[in-house]
Length: 289
Ligand SMILES: Cc1cc2nc3c(=O)[nH]c(=O)nc-3n(C[C@H](O)[C@H](O)[C@H](O)COP(=O)(O)OP(=O)(O)OC[C@H]3O[C@@H](n4cnc5c(N)ncnc54)[C@H](O)[C@@H]3O)c2cc1C
Image 1 (cartoon, rainbow, N blue to C red):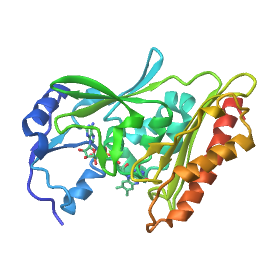
Image 2 (cartoon, rainbow, N blue to C red; image 1 turned 60 degrees about the vertical axis):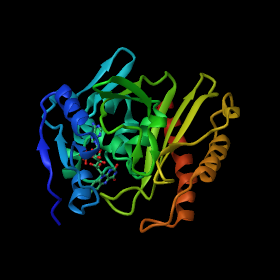
Image 3 (tube, protein in one colour; image 1 turned 120 degrees about the horizontal axis):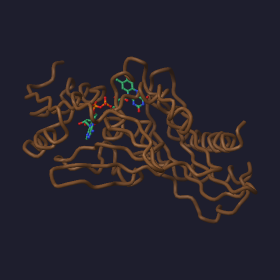
C-alpha cells in the first residue's frame, strides 16, 4: 500500500527542523533512517500530514569523546557505529547490540536516534543505553532538556518526547576502571528482532567485590527497562552464585507476551539464562579474557 498524502520538508539545520516541529507539532513526524517509520506509513498505521526529513542535517552525525563522555549525534547510522574504532575499543556492548540489528542494508540507513525514539520494546539500543547510564539531549524551540535513558521509555511505542521536540544527542559516561558491559540476544534467524535480549553492566573493586551492577531487558515487557536489583549485592563477590541470584531477579521482573518468536514462559527463561551469560561476559571483559 502507498502512504497517505503528506507534505515534505528537508531542513538543513537543527533550528529549521525545530521551527517546523513547532509549527506542525501533532501533525508532523521526523524522518531519520525511515526503516521503521516508512513501514508504518505504508500500512497507514501512521498518517503524518508533514514529514520533516532530518537527513540533510549533517551536524547530527558524529561520534566523539568530550571530557569524560562519549557523544553520539542522533542521526549517526548503525553502520557507522559498527565501524567506529572508539566504540569498538571502549564500548563493545554497543557493538554487541548494533551488529544484531536487522541486516547491512537496514543498518546503513537506520540511526541511533530512530532506534531510541521509535519505542518498540524490541529495539536493541535502549536497554544498552540504560545499563550504560546514558542520557539523551532533547531540543525544542523552548530550549534543551536531558532525560536519563532509563526514564525515556514510557510504554510500548511511547517515549518521553513532546510533538515539538527532537532527540539530538546521546551522551554516555566513561566506564569505570574495572567495569565491563555486554549484550546478548536470542533471535530466531538473522535480521530478526529479539525473542529476548539482556544487557549487563558490572563494576568491581580490586578484590572482585561488586561496586555496581545493572541489567537491562529487551523484548521482555511492554518497553525496554532496567531490572531493579537489590543494593545488598553491592560488596558481594562477583561469582556464579551471585550471578545466578541476579538472573532469578531478571526472570521475576520479565513480563513478556507470547508471540510468533516464543512463548512468554520461554522468554522469561531466556531472561534468566541470558542475564547469567551476559554477567559472565561482562566480568570476562573486565578481566581481559
Ligand atoms: C527488516 C528490519 C529488521 C529490523 N530489525 C531490528 C532489530 O533486530 N533490532 C532493532 O533494534 N531494530 C530493528 N529494526 C528497526 C531499525 O533498527 C529501525 O531503523 C530503527 O528502529 C529506527 O531507526 P530509523 O533511523 O530508521 O528511524 P525512522 O524510521 O526514521 O523513525 C522511527 C521513529 O523515530 C522518530 N525519530 C527518528 N529520529 C528522531 C529524532 N532524532 N528525534 C525524535 N524522533 C525521532 C520518527 O519520527 C519515528 O517515529 C529493523 C528494521 C527492519 C526494516
